[in-house]
Length: 164
Picture 1 (cartoon, rainbow, N blue to C red):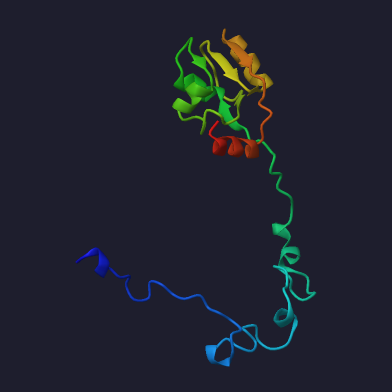
Picture 2 (picture 1 turned 90 degrees about the horizontal axis):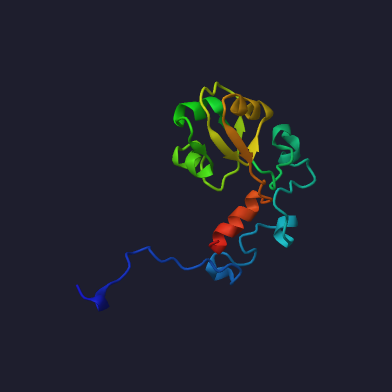
């Protein structure tokens, strides 16, 4: 077998369907659009049902609005921190990501007050609930509430594409 004898297998390459090229082509005259009517004469937008109430308006559970700039915080409970981190350790985004409690170092998270914290921890988080703050100080630890990043999920995608 030589390079000049290589060929693609039969049917691997198909020619584009050329519509409206005469009666001998099989898709002449009406060009695959059928006979008369709105769709034969021009374009009809997606979802248009000829004046009938469209499916998207007929089905109630598909309605609504999804805010694409919403920042979804991942919840981390104090009880989980007490189990995973020894006394005196610093809990920040890097530590939580390595313990697989959050998905990503850049992911926004909030420490919640659920569970018992029996030892002192230093917690650095973008958000902390009031119950978590009081439980951390009661256990002899300290917390630092980081300035929330004014970034939306969309901005994070653009930053990742730019390589920053």
